[in-house]
Image (cartoon, rainbow, N blue to C red):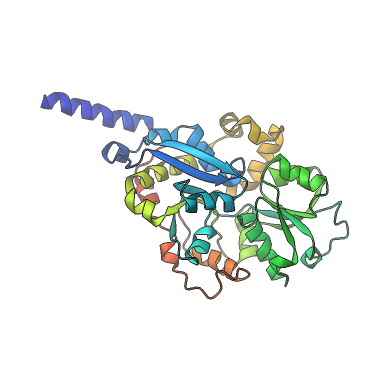
Length: 345
């Protein structure tokens, strides 16, 4: 009997190694196999690692049954987690800081993006005589959803020009065809959104780019340092109760990030849903080249990232100004380091 058990156990471990599944899964079963993840605009490149982990069955390989709820923007995804209808959020890191300012403790545990990828642009039709950011006063700016990372980026750019967020009207337009239609039909004067939406509008000649954070160099120029972007974060209580589940989620995401480092355009097109392409495969691949550098290569939080994010929020957000934010409680690289030591693509 013991010999049979030993052979069976060996087969399980060998099977895990052959499939690229971390051996940690075979030894540490997730405490919670069913996990709900809230995301705001899943079709965007900002959240591409999440889609890759889902579509390539990396979550399933870790013993997880994932349910992804897609909302119009990150702020709404955050509300789902705070309200208890989602376990984890795939969203902007800065939300962990905003939550702590309200005495709610959420922690980032794997980074998806090392640059925000957000582009602020004005409509050439609505603002043909645009000269500076100051011209946006009194205008309607389309964002994925009010309070989301798109409105945070726009608010920071406005603050640098001496404007307050209240000097403009933020209009939620989503992250897909609706956002494009809102600008082209004149419902908004400017837009803060991400690819592939922004590349489509730019190629159509509809916009003039004001501020761009799709590359590391441009991000440092805008924010003054590394600005962490999309990540997986959850309440500290969830992470404490479910360390193996959190590790499994991290393993899957790190596999996705590593796959994306070497994936060809053909690989990408064949993996993502057809709806992501906005009816134009060439445009999608062009957009991918714009943002590829912005994705994290390994899931690790850069050392100066959290401080840059806090400084950005403090420039304009009254809920954070003057609040004693403990950055060490908003992120951890522990799970990613373990994943990097064991995960194979």
